[in-house]
Image (cartoon, rainbow, N blue to C red; front, side, top):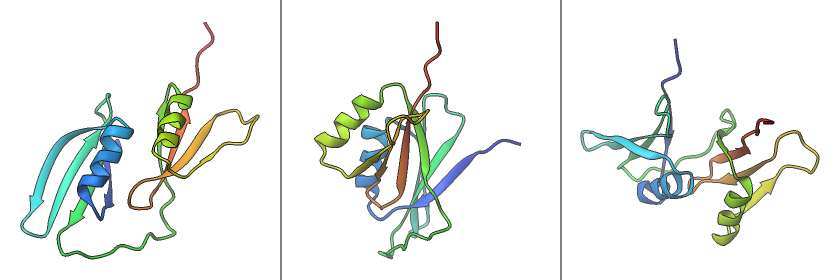
Length: 125
């Protein structure tokens, strides 16, 4: 058994797609409709083995973020470059404390979901 995808509901599909594709670098691989009710957009990373499903309901409903969900996590090779982009966009972020074994930041996507971005560990050559 392997993990297939995670679905999150989003308020503004275009704004959310821009965040996940332009900022986080995911690629849209599939889009579908559930009648007139919802649009589903599947995103993946370069490996393509796992998908994030963005579900946008067309009825204008608002979503309350529950406390049962934690966050989505991504790894990057250059965390400083990501932090520069976050600052350029004037987004709120929280950085790991100095001295931690892994550097990371938390940002919020346009829907308020917590996104953790971890710096990939570099191998000693």
